[in-house]
Amino acid sequence: MASPDQITHWREAIFARLVQVVLVLGLCTAVPNIVQSAREEMWGVAVVDVFALGWLAMLWRLERRMSYPARALQFLLIAFAVGVALMLQVGPVAHVYVLLVPCLAALLIGLKPAIWLLLAGAVAIVLTGFAPQPDPAAIGMSDDPALRAAIVALNYLFIAGILTFSCGVLLRHLARSLAEGEQLAFYDPLTGLPNRRLLLDRLGGLLASSEREQVFSAVMFVDLDRFKTINDARGHATGDTLLKLAGERLSQLVRKSDTVARIGGDEFVVLLAHLAPDLAAAGNAAQLVAQKVRAALARDFEIGGQWYACSASIGVTLLPKFGQSADDLLREADTAMYRAKGAGRNGIAYFEATMQAEVERRLTLERELAQAIEQERLHMVYQPQFDCQGRLHGAELLMRWERDDGSMVSPATFIPLAEEAGLIVPLGMWALRQACLAQQRMSTLGLSLPLSVNVSPDQFRQADFVQQVRGTLQEHGVEPALLILEVTEGLLVEKLEETVARMNELAAMGVRFSIDDFGTGYSSLAYLKRMPLYELKIDRSFIMDMPDDANDVVIVQAILAMASHMGMRVVAEGVETQAQADFLAAHGCHALQGYLLGRPAPLPALLDLLVAQAALAGRTPGTSPA
Image (cartoon, rainbow, N blue to C red; front, side):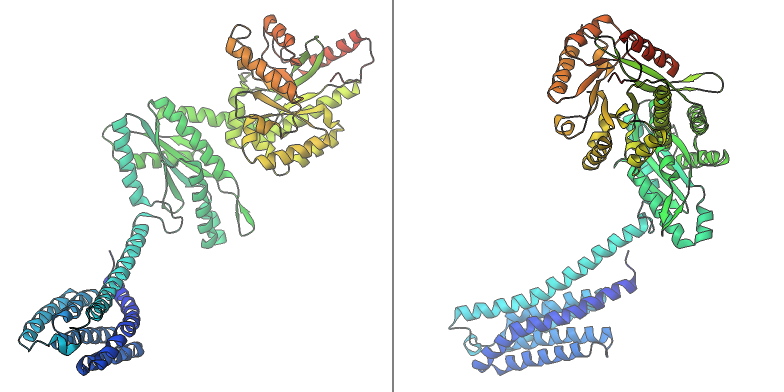
């Protein structure tokens, strides 16, 4: 709602513009009218118009010397006087001038003066009705219909223009004020995010829709851990910038149907709408988002050329729950957040006990994985690849993680965990170093074999990835041609030009590329023909049911034919039966990888295979079989 002072300001702004507009319209309409009146010797009309224009010009000139109420009142008196005079001079056609006065009064000075002027206009119309009516011939309108119509139209345009302009400007100011009022009432002025008031409104709507559609949603309470320290040490300007950047990162992580709100200080709330119809799936989805939020806020913030570290404690609760309101859910998420902060900060806590147990298990794995990477407690195994004649052709490095208690953690578990926790880049660099160390070991034995290393999209997109690969190869004295980087198809659909340029730079060094799990992602010939690719690896999902599944047979044949035409080698993963191996060999597959031929094993086992192959070939070890 606009304040009285704001309305007065609007009226003054409108009046200042209105006087200018009326002067322009007056000159355009009154001057021809004055000329015509003088020609017809209607001196009364001419005098009224000249007097009105002069008085109006004086008001315009005295804008800074006269108060707004005095100028507005005089403006209305000008209009009223002109209306009464013209009614006496030209008759009822001038009623439109009297109509203008109460309308403008309502806009410029208020409703009560407008009512009085409305009554005064009615009285004036009645009184002028008793005056002798002017003879149409005497005012020069009887013998020229076109001129009569033009004069009436000019008067109409003058009065209607004033009313239209005044109302239009006022409504525009009102719409702007309402928008500003809504922004102040429902949005945080610093970040532009919804505030607590709008958050509670949306949370109430989400609670109702979740109950109605029988689907689970989540409330996530996010508190910045080190914000107070940064704010106190570097000042409020730095703190405000940090809050804005944190809000932007949160907004980028959620869907359009979700809500990110700032409810005060360093506290944000995220509403995740309609996650899943069952509690477990909704909890997993909320946990995935929470992990992304924690990782995003754990990245350093650059402010004014300096970097600031700021983690987050996150509390999560699921909805709907019987008999609970929006305030209850917000309180639960807040309680969970303080539980996460009390457990050492930079963590996630669920209000629900079952969900909390899963989160704690995941966080424990994450901490142990970070320690295992730092202390190099992971190890590599090597799965051999053979050509269709049974010769050792290459090997793929596969990670294994054995925890301190002796239990093994599947790569399907810890690789996604590393990606979500921001550990995949150091993990990938460790794998690259292991490949180079293996090459060094083979070199001392006079052996060589191309080794394939998986590279995640996050690692590949690091700005210094090319320099890291070059430096690692040079440090260990490894030929670049002995390194094959396996990338997934997902790498090819984002920042294509940058990806191609980086691949070409590595290929120029001699490094070779392989597309892993080919056929399960987004590849197309348009992408593939631009890449400096060495080989394709057919995903095991297409191999496992061959040759009995006709669809898989067609897919594999198509991949082999395409690769042949594009000059690329093909490796088939997951070969476990002789029938699969025979089919692939018959259709020109270059290399096979799977349990039928060799299980993943430590490096010494691979070296034994390589030495045995060299002995059977009757040659001195040292020549690459690739």
